[in-house]
Image 1 (cartoon, rainbow, N blue to C red):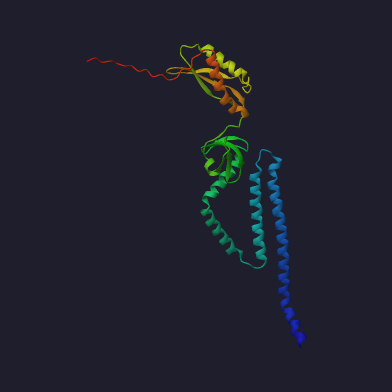
Image 2 (tube, rainbow, N blue to C red; image 1 turned 90 degrees about the vertical axis):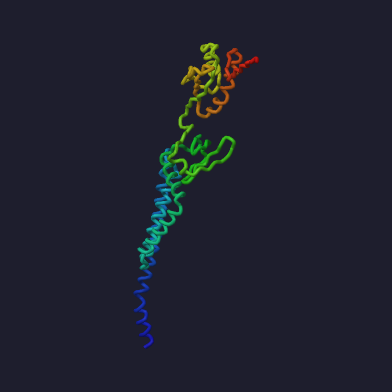
Length: 276
């Protein structure tokens, strides 16, 4: 009699046990395949930038991570479905939680969106000198949320990407050759041709000033007390600041040696002696 009862108990629970075993096996298969697919998708997207040098690897690693976690999320839902869990409520809960988190992290998400745009359009790259968000420096790092600059006095400036995107960005390193604008004034009594010869001579002897394109030296303005020259030598981008800060001193010394006056503001005072 006891053996018959045991046999009935086994027959009663066997289908349930087989169902659970089948579900566990299928869940494991789904999980393993899903993790494998997610890893392959991540690698495929992340390695796109290695085939195209103009693409930023940070951006594609981010896209790869988004794709991987999206796939894993669907894998998790599929696994839960195998055990009869109602995932509709879980999805609704996650959606509400995502909305709440999105509202709480508006600033962070705006930085993320700006970072994606900067990495797609690449108005600058690591190593460039830029003016952005009222700051000037060398770009040392660009990630999804911030851009890091290094200033000439060796300070580190971390700028949120949302403050850069949508504003004016000046990339001083975009072109290999740059013009360096500077202005010099000479007195009206001096010869314009002689002053131009002196300036041309200084530029011709400067080691970083290019011969082609030729420097631009012309009268720009007839000021109140001076004739002002616009001087624009051209140089390699890496020598921009060397030219900018060395040429004015050299031109000043050369004009002094040539006896050409550089005017400066004068104030004339007239004293009137009134007699009673």
